[in-house]
Amino acid sequence: MGLKGFAEGGIASIVAGCSTHPLDLIKVRMQLQGESAPAVQTLRPALAFHTTAAHTGQIHIPPPPRVGPITVGVRIVQQEGVAALFSGVSATVLRQTLYSTTRMGLYDMMKQKWSDPKTNNMPLAKKIGAGLIAGGIGAAVGNPADVAMVRMQADGRLPAAQRRNYKSVVDAITQMAKNEGVTSLWRGSSLTVNRAMLVTASQLASYDQFKETILEKGIMKDGLGTHVTASFAAGFVAAVASNPVDVLKTRMMNMKVEPGMAPPYAGALDCAMKTIKAEGPMALYKGFIPTISRQGPFTVVLFVTLEQVRKLLKDF
Image (cartoon, rainbow, N blue to C red):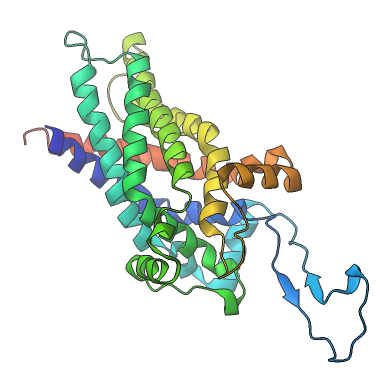
């Protein structure tokens, strides 16, 4: 029974992840808006006199104005082509295989063990606890694929000379391990784990809770309408709970560390403080519209697919 839960969750997660990948890519690009642009070194004559700090030979390019998800999507298509909307989709498949399969399977195992034998329901507190545990373990397992996915999705926004140009998720992980060390594969892992705990606890627990409430109140019967309603509500809850951590995770994973130079962010707290100081507290909700636009359909596809897969595999 435990292994079947992993298989069901894995299939549903891969289908949901691939079908909503373009929305996730737009979300990542929006979350990176407002980051300081790299300084450009200008040439100075060999006999130039010392000048004031205003003329140190570096030009700081101001960040472009912030735009909405539709504009971001249109620009990606215009500048990089339609295929760019699926940049990093191989990393998404690997991420869902590692992360979501683990969290869905573990949650299902705990749900079977902790549910009331009479009602077959689990108390909300235990649902949240199961989600926190399953999400944390799943994130730790899937972090390398998560880092690769963020970098592949963000690559197109960089100048051509600075792009990493990963060919696939395997190439991305190999190059990161070779050039930046194996530990780079777990960059931002504390944020990934925290986000995954929040997402899994809010998404899976709230789906089960909404579904049980709908059935107990007799609002709808157990069918497609109930699954869609409960899953969309769960997606909204998950988006609100996880967006701030998601912004920090994206920036930590995407930062480029030059040899011999201090990294842009010393850690998660430093990233949060610099982001809030430079862009205001609402910067932590950057990309919320594409997040809910992606989280909603993702959660709907995830749970509707999961319910159908469970029906197909019920005899196994």
